[in-house]
Each structure stands twice: as structure tokens, then as C-alpha cells.
Image 1: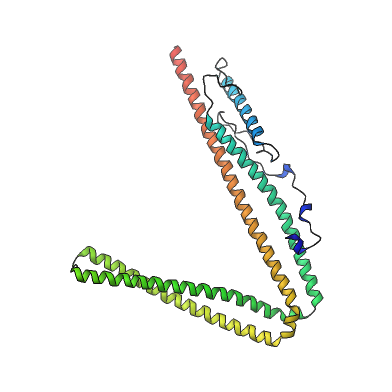
Image 2 (image 1 turned 120 degrees about the horizontal axis):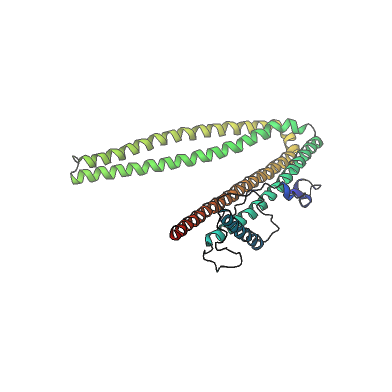
Length: 320
């Protein structure tokens, strides 16, 4: 895309952002007393298996540290490489750590891509502005003379789109009105045929259908007026375009390549803007997933700690 805008801009020459500048999110070590230790969420050049191994190894050390701080030094330890102890390893911890690792890797990748794309967009905008300005200077005064025509032409495109939308909404309102009228007529005919015109519930249903028909009728009238206004606006702008084209015909033809190029560049910048919005949405989603996994790890940690305290209390009670 950048090659179409400026030959001097090479997307692959964008400097990559230093890892130290990428925002970090605090990681949660599971099975502790619920205290979170701040630290980087993990660089993208680490394998998830290595990150998981480090997390689990740190996990076992923290469990043993908590046990020593609780004064239960002689209690059974939970080594990282052994599952033979009395307290089983909670599989939910491993699942949440994997979720944390995946979310962290994705978040760092998206943030790096966002930084690189912002640099690309800035260079693209600079190249576009420079090329458009130099192109206009090369064509001369015809660009300024034909500017009202092309501005009016852009208004015509917008008016045409508005007219199509107004026509669609009017047709839909007419369809809803026709359906509600048929429904009301069928209900009235059925009531007369069955002789249930004195039934209170039946009359309430008929009133509801009649009220819906009145609302659809009002909506159809409103959409008809909107369609009429859109049609009148389109016709007026079309007449203005025709008048300007007749008066500035030579200048319009001479400056057409300039305005066509400017329109293409606007489309390119709009695509970049939409891509930026998609990246921002993806980053937000990755942060939510990381925060969710971190929050669940904290909850699991607190549950394990409470269970350990309860078991120790029962053990002390049995000894006494």
C-alpha cells in the first residue's frame, strides 16, 4: 500500500519498538496468599512451554514460602517436579497460567504491530500530503477553478447514498403498514364471524393491533416526507453539478487526474484508519482476557490458601 503512495517510503524499514517500551501487565503467581508481584507479561520471543515451566517453578517456591511463613515448616512440601505429596496440584492453576501466557503473547504482538502501523500511517499521511500538493502545483490554476465542481460532485455522491437509504426505509415502512392492515382486517373478520365482539380480551387484542397499525401509518407518512426531501436535495445538487460542469468544462477535464488521485489517497487513509480501529479492538480484547485469567488465578489462590488454613486448623484441633 505504501508503494502506491510514495516510492521513498519502505514499510519494512520501520524501526521496531524496543521491548522495554511495551506496556506490561502484572502477572499473578498462583497459590500464594493473594499478593500479586509486578513484572513483565512475557516477551514474544519466549516459547509458551518455557513460560509455563517458569511459572510453575515459581509457583512451587511461593507455596513453600507461604507454608514457612505460616509457621508450618515441617509440613509436607509441594515440589515442582513431584506430585507425590499429600496436597494435589490444582489443574485450574495450570489452565489459567496458559491463558495468561497466551494473552500476554498476543497482547505484546498486537502492541508491537500497533506501534509499527502508527509509524507507517504517519509516513503515509506525510507522503500523501506532499504528493497532492506537488501534483496541484504542477497543474496550475485549473485546480482552484474546478474545486467547486468536485466539491459539489462529492455532495452529489452523498446525496445519492442518502436518497437510496431514504427509499429503502420508505419501502420497508410501507411493507410494515400493509402487513399490520392485513392483520387487523383478518382479526376483525374473525371476530364478526365468531360473534365474539363482546369479549373483553378479544377487544383488547384488537385495540393493540389497531394501535400498531396507526403507528405504522404515522411512520410511513414520516418516511415518505424524508424520501421527498432527499429526492429534492439530490435534484438540486445534480442541477448545480451540471451548471458548473458546463461553465468550467476545460478546467474540470484538465484537473481530473488531480482529484482522482486525491480521492484514491483518501480511500487509502480510510482503510488505514479502519485497520487501526481493528487493532485497538483486538488489544482491548487481549487485555480483557489477561485480566480475566489474572483475576481467576487470584480467586483460586485465595481458595487454596483458605483450604490450607482450614486443614491446618483441623489438624491442630485433632492434636489437642
